[in-house]
Length: 322
Image (cartoon, rainbow, N blue to C red):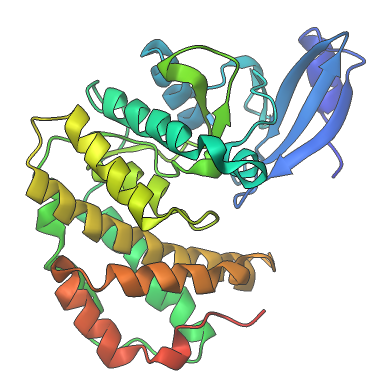
């Protein structure tokens, strides 16, 4: 992975001239990341091509999180015309690979992640767009728009109408800041004491929405299996930390949002494969279907389950073949 052409001049202009630049990671977007090393200092260079990615929301939400006392990587320098941002380096201890190597701290790490959400949700959500019905539907429609054609199925009537019966349950609580991709691969173990020991990544799509969304994202992880016992314990932990919530309404919203998110991601990962030529993503489809099939058994999902049972046969629930 080669750094973008303006990297040398950008680093020179901000006190990092002559630094070593090594590939670090990419993600499902067009963003790429590099580690920059100079005289014992390190930073992360984010390359977000401005014709494809707008880094302004990422910087704004990161500042908001930082101002609230949470650990979000802060910019050391930025040139948004080139799409280059030099960020504080949180290291390499992502929760998912750390727990893959040694799961002994799993409960404590998830407890810390849940406590962060509970604390965050007691603050104003800041200046982010609303997670409204139109956005929930746009996301849910990624399934019929991308997944169904990829498995040779046409969309049957009634999909939007089934979801429309569910949306009112998602507006029973004042909106909070929803980071949208809160899971083990976007959480970093930091050498810092207390609640903020987890670093937060990948929040540029943050919205103002229901507090159950990020909890469902954390506990129904596509890349890492969270046991039913741990999921149950962590939902209970969140509710205990926020005793003013209507527990029944929260649990209903959690079920709906878990299903909406997992069904959306079936579409997103199909699009990444079909449109963007990223062959790694269909391998997650079996895990997603495992989650979706379980999600649809919740009574709150009855209208959507009826649509899936009528129009998406078992043979089409195995994933797109790469």
